[in-house]
Amino acid sequence: MNRQEALNSIRENVENENLAKHMLATEAIMCALAGHLGEDEQEWGLAGLLHDIDVELTAGDMSSHSKLGADLARDRGRARR
Image (cartoon, rainbow, N blue to C red; front, side, top):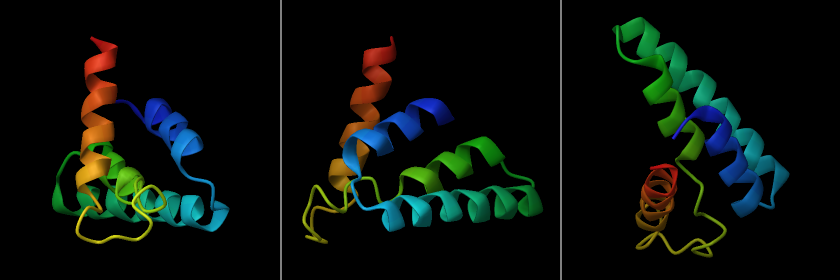
C-alpha cells in the first residue's frame, strides 16, 4: 500500500476529523523516528498513518482494535495485485 492508498482508506473508514489529524501527526513522528534510527521512513510512516484506521469500526473494542486494521491493509494490498 502506498501513502495515497492509505489516505484513501482513511477517508473511507474514519469520520472523526481529529482522529484523522492524530493519524497524520503519528505518521510524521514515525517518519522522523525512522530517519533518526536509519530505518525505512516510508514503511514506518505508513504504520503510523494506519495505526488507528479501525478505531471507529471496532467501536473502541480494544480486543479487536488493530486486528481489523491489519485485515483492511492486507485486503487493500491484495486488491492491488
